[in-house]
Amino acid sequence: MNLEAIIFDLDGVIVDTAIFHYQAWKRLANELGFDLTIHQNEHLKGISRFESLEIVLEVGKINHLTKKEKEELATRKNEWYSENIHKMTPDDILPGVKVFLEKLKSAKYKIAIGSSSKNAGVILERIGYSNYFDAVIDGNKISFSKPDPEVFIKAAKELKADPRNCVVFEDAAAGIEAAHNAGMKAIGVGSPEVLCKADLIVPDFRNINISIFDKLI
Image (cartoon, rainbow, N blue to C red; front, side, top):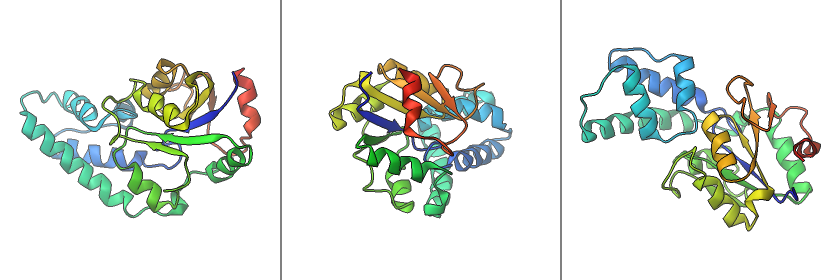
């Protein structure tokens, strides 16, 4: 592999918005009369809002809602989530991320965001990174969510990089699968149990150097 570009998922990789998603989905579930556990929430990571809603409704055994009612629930959840992300600051960038990104920049690697979130622009603006990445592909630019490879394929295309020479950092099983479906290597950030199909797994970005890519060859 002649490494050309690095693509990062956003939620749970660059910033920890996962708790905001969970709080909003749990609040919605509670209003509907049931609870949503942290373990159940793992299945919502890396996929679209409406796919997440279907899983939440399945947990609550709710199967009688119309399309309009589902849209209203998804909108309500997103409003609660948006309230929290608009309060974010540069302090919300996860430990080690800034230093690692600077090392990639110094090494002249192309970097991109590949996220299913439609709030990526707001988050990047709040943390001061709106113009930092060479490409940002988010939920507003794709038709299919992970594990479909579209988001990563589009990121590679915008970077003018061969997908086979790209590495993805992901915190969700669906994202790892999407990276592999795109023909890319995937480094999992987080739990080995959840990210067992990744080519390599790191707990976070603290003490990570660009030499980590040598382990993928």
